Amino acid sequence: MNKKEFTVFGMNMEIISIVYGIILITWGLVVTSLSGSNSITSLIPSIVGFPVFLLAVLALILPKLKKLLMHIIVIVGLIIFLGGLDFLRGFGSDNGVFSNFWASISKLMMLITGFIFSFLCVRSFIFIRKNRDH
Image (cartoon, rainbow, N blue to C red):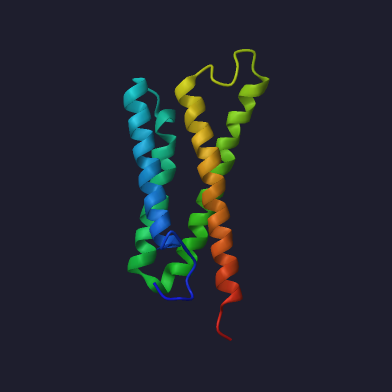
């Protein structure tokens, strides 16, 4: 990692993306297991986490494609955040926000982490643009 690279806790965005992808994949598998769910929807965090993980690994392996791959990753991050916004729908429900605890907690996790991840991606892009050699 060079000095002109955006880092958080000493990790660049490719590593952060890999870690985030692993967290999402693990979350979906654990929630599915703990909840005893037979629904594919409980695996949504894993399903969206896999492309984040895979694209980040490819960004490390294929540095010439890094810019493209990281832009795709931020789009996936925004989709994760937007999907998490479904959590807010529970406030208008007669059953309440946590009527389905596992689904609600997953949506809330995706809302919060998707926002933070997307925010870090945007900060990274701004950092790169400001520090670009002309």
